[in-house]
Length: 200
Image (cartoon, rainbow, N blue to C red; front, top):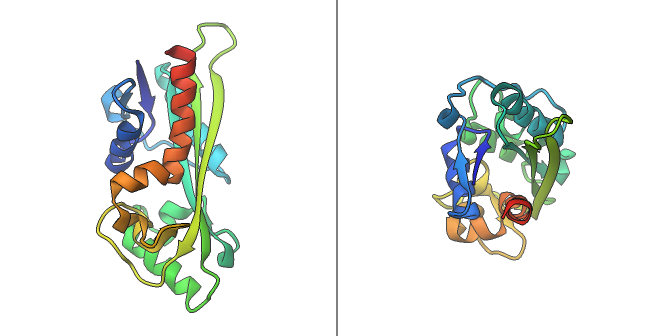
């Protein structure tokens, strides 16, 4: 079974492939020849994920899923949220700058509660005249923002996010643990159950 994951982020792609296993072949945007800068103009994770999936489906006619992930920090009113990847501004996704800004914004605030949320939007070809079927899946993991970076693994905010029930950050826990407990893992588990259940 083949499906497109609307990303060219190598970290995300590898993570998703490890989680889904060999039963589902996951293609990247590059694999299908899509090199467009797909817009993300939504104000929620759900809107952005759906927008990305819709773009690929409309242009390539393939079953596709897209995700959007946000880090929501209580003391910052839920920021950076939908703007997590570009929190520090600029054109690229500068993880170091994003982490530096987040730690500076929090300062000495003792309320470090935060959560990661991933929303996946799946558009499946139905073969009918009604167009694709849209299904969304959400995963979340609660935790806290550490005061300093820790760990060499992961990406994004992983070096400063410690999941609830663990003594180390995502970056320090390593992919073996992270891929079992992360927000993306939880959303992908729901996606996999749906795909294997409906097509297996």
